[in-house]
Amino acid sequence: MDLNHSRQLGHEAHVQFEFGRKDFRIISPLGYYRVVEYRPDWHAALGRAEVEPWWGAWEPLFLAGAAAVTILSLMLIWTVLATFYWLPLWVISFLEDRELNLRQSWRLAGAVLMPGALFFTFAIFCYGLRWIDLMMLGSLAGLHLLIGWVYLFISPLFLPKVSAVTAAKPNPFQAPPA
Image (cartoon, rainbow, N blue to C red):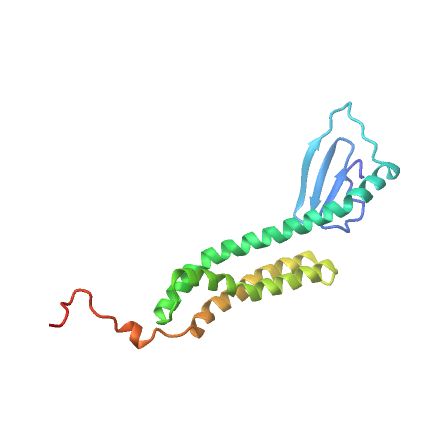
């Protein structure tokens, strides 16, 4: 609580909820956002005796919800990235004369994201233990995408080449031998 929004309070958290005399703000390293201005007749009991039991009861649910949202968001992002990566992967494989159909290309695109995903999972773990700060986590998020790109361009080289038997299919427009 900072009634005048004097910014004198500690900023230990990356996201902070600040109650002022006339409004409520959410403060982050990117700035602040005024959520709501209070009505003049509105009063709320926000003393330690009232708030601490409520937070103690709901904190595990907030943490579990944050973990679930993080996991689902990452899974969605990686699925979307695999959807974007399948076409370049298929084109590279086609140009390198490697065996890969469209379905296999999408699955391989998901697989090339796995090393970066493991790296970023470890980065989130380190952030949770406060070994790294929020800015470093953001940098590592970008690096985890670069790791996926490296695997995207290298992985087609390890696919089997199109065999000579498969490549030498009969001409469908040629008449059968008599």
